[in-house]
Length: 238
Image (cartoon, rainbow, N blue to C red):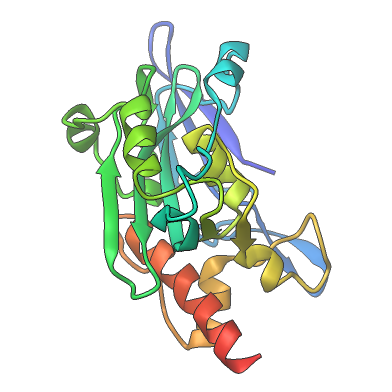
């Protein structure tokens, strides 16, 4: 449903004009307007890029997945912890890569916030959603392996992790973890899977909280905090 138009800029050089959102759905029917800019199908897209991006990743990525470590013993404090986390991704030459992770505890304290250096060449910072610029990414101190190691200082296999559409965040972190609470499942879409409600919609309805309004992009700390607040609200009121 994405609207893509190619325009010649100079000899043998192209730019891509496109809409970043899907068509509007009203009364169960697809309308001929795009949600991002309200334009119809006869108008050129509202975004411009100089290359395509992809979600494809090499098979070698599978070899980098790690299970969260087991408890070091019966007194391992990590086993009793509950955290909410959210990741931001950027597009690289080989699909999406982790670019930021934010983790909050049950008191809404930020216990980890790391900008991550992607493994592959960055093609699109995805700033509209990631909130990250190329300068921030190029200045990142941690690579993925270092980020995982720091994450494991907080988390073991018994830690409860909260998030929204957590499969995306775990894939970004290249982790396998089984004790999860996913707000997209706890607050399901009325049509059921594969449809999911946006975190922004759930936060507005349940918490009367407006999020993701920053014109500079999403804030992973805000999203992680919102997930924690939603689950605390659920526990206290249900």
